[in-house]
Length: 147
Image (cartoon, rainbow, N blue to C red; front, side):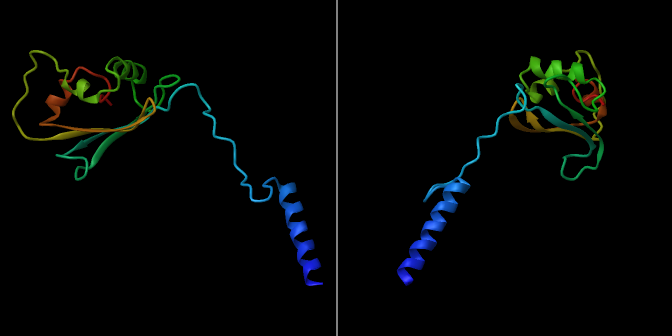
């Protein structure tokens, strides 16, 4: 009687598992996730803080910027900021190094820090740059950190 009950239970389990789709010893798997867009992800949070680094300085302003498939976000000049980022292939360092020639700034130490974090064309990014004072930040010829 035990062998019969065990065989019936095993048969029922195999039948149930084949109906569910896993089969005997098989593993059900989901289809791989398909991207919803033909564009790589691009979503950034840009911030401006008054202080020496982003960890200790209070954030004064922050905006969002997404460049694919079209420039969007709370950045006031999203279209131009995206064009500048594409032109330098997402190199924030290159953007913050471009300054107006002939600009004269005082040497006072009143640091401001800008950050960019998120995803740029499918790659994670995190960038931080500290300027000695707002004049040096405003001397940068880029719209990316102008907000």
